Image (cartoon, rainbow, N blue to C red; front, side, top):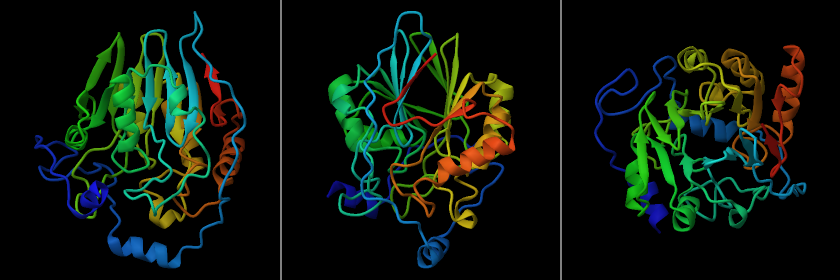
Length: 329
C-alpha cells in the first residue's frame, strides 16, 4: 500500500542551492538534457517489438569468495548493477536489489529471470552501500531495510533520496552532490556525474539527483558507473580524479536507441566510456537480470564482443562475469 502511495504522490525533497545541474526546483544534465515525455513513453510501448526473454535462467555455481591477505580488493558480480566490493577493512554493496521485480508494486513491472549470485543471507558484513539514483532497479527499499536491520551500513545516496530513506526509518544515510565525498576507513567515496534522470512516481521527475561513484582506497580506484548515457562526464571524471583501475560499466537496456540513447549506453558506447576513462579493466553490468528494454537477453554481451573487436581490445579488457563470480585484485 505504501508503494502505491509513493506512485501517486510525489516525494518532497530537501532544498538545495542552485548549481550547473540544479535550477532550484529540478536537477538536470548540463550537457545533454533530453528528457523523454509521457508521450514518448507511450509511443515506445505502442510500437515496441521486444525480444522474448526466458522466464528463468539458472545461474552457474560459484562459491562465495572472501578477500585474502595481500589482496587489494575482491569484486563479486551479484546481479544487474549490484556488486560486492571487499576490501581488507570494509565491504561495499552497489545499488543492491534482491526484489523479484524492479517495480513499485509486486504484481507488475520487470521481473527477475536470474537469482542473485550471492544470497542476501550469505553476504559478509556490509559497511557501506552506494546508491546511484532512485529508479526501482537501483534503489530497492526492501533490500535496504533488510541490510539496515542486519548490518546498519552507511548508505550514500544522491541529493534528495535521503528523504525517502529517512521516511522508511533508515537512519545512517548521507546525501552527496556531485564531487562531494565521504571517507570510511581511509577509503574515499566520491560522488561523480552521470547522464541520467530520476523518478519514483508520476510527478517527481528529477526532484532528486543521480550519479556515479569513484571509490579510492589509496592503492586502487574503482569506478561504479550506475546508470548512464554516454557523455563527456567520463573524460571529466578521469581528468579530475585520475583513471580508474577498474570501471564497472552498464551495457544493457539500450533499445530502441531513439528512446534510450541519452540515458542508457549501448555496448559500443560502454567501450567508448572504458577508453575515455583509461580504465585498466572494465566489468559489465546492468544486463541479463530484468528486461528493461527491447533487446534480447544475450544481445548486450554479443554487441560488447563486437565492440571490443572493433576497438582491437580483448575480452580481458572488459570482463563479463557470471552472477556470483569474483575477480581478485
